[in-house]
Image (cartoon, rainbow, N blue to C red; front, side):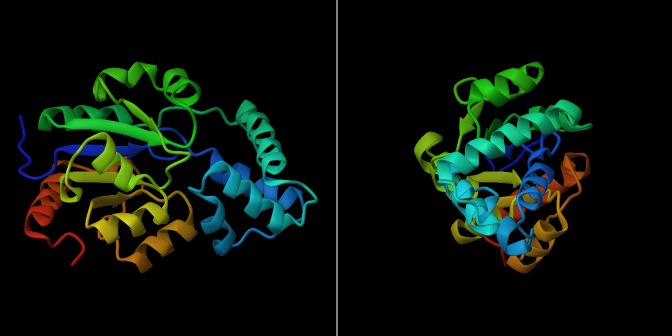
Length: 229
């Protein structure tokens, strides 16, 4: 059994971190299909936003004569077709990482912008035993980015007691504000560049690269207040 002195919870984003990334290519193809130009700014405005905000921003980018609600509904139909040929799967190494976390004897939760029934129960049921029994998955659509709500409202912890793992820089920005632990696993060049600009110290290609030594090092930084220094 390994020991962490500060971290009490690891919160892991689902899409693009535990599960294969199907949203970034689907968003890009949807925007381009409807005449929009996919840019770093648009990615920032759409990624990790509540659904209605993402729909609004895609509608503006594509100059669609649709409401935000109609646009996001059209996008989800587009995504549904996309995953018919690019299925959602657990990424290689995800279960191994969750087994590593078990050896630290800390709580682990997951989160994302879809309902638990849609994403966790359907695609992650085989991993359920690795997650917190009371809150294995948190739907963050209405509370995005969710750092404050997950930390304080749901788990009643201090910000320096939680480590977030996410592929979106917006979450990194909020984690930095609260001095919360953060590991970035960006799936696009734009997100990697934005995380570097934010000052994220730990950027990994995937969960496979997150090992025991990295977790222990981050734990020490959080304990000393140097994680974002």
